[in-house]
Image (tube, rainbow over all chains, first blue to last red; front, side, top):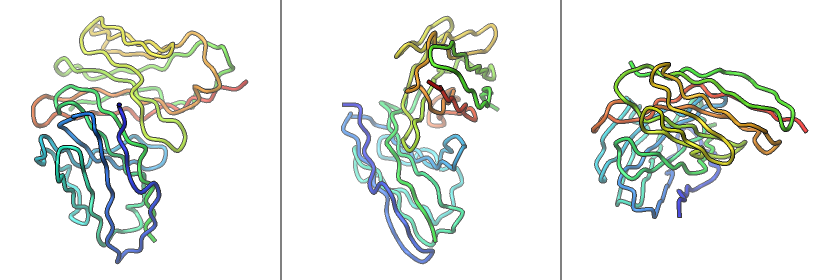
Length: 113
Length: 114
């Protein structure tokens, strides 16, 4: 099973809302990632968790708050977002953080109104 | 810093044509190299990888060879199908340890016409 699942598939939220994106993998991977992808652009790394500890934060605004409750789950908590945060949010996982291929989920299409 | 340069396209081909998408990387260290494919409305799928010089990655008729002397990892397919229409991303791994991450090229949109 090489599947990474993400929920919800689509999300529309207002600028004052609080919502969460969820990601799950059951491949025994110990590294998990959040990416943001705008249309016609490559994915931009936001956060990396390695063994459930935050390893990389690419200077992401604090309105995005990641959480890794256990080795299979990764959440992204959203609060007070801006319209420019509308994008496809991709989760990925890999066996470890170093040099391994990453497996991506289908993404959550987020629209901020 | 680490970077990847790939032909941006778009590339439009007829079915059964030969495909080449060029990709070059900065020669920092000995990175792992990857090709990912993204179909419309979906996430990225790993297409193939190579972890050292002269390795050839292959999958679904696609191939790419890790060329250290030219710092290239060009994607090829001998006969494309309509179903190959997608965006293709070349990527390299950066430095190791806790700072390791993927650097992506800008992506190449491929359209295959019947």
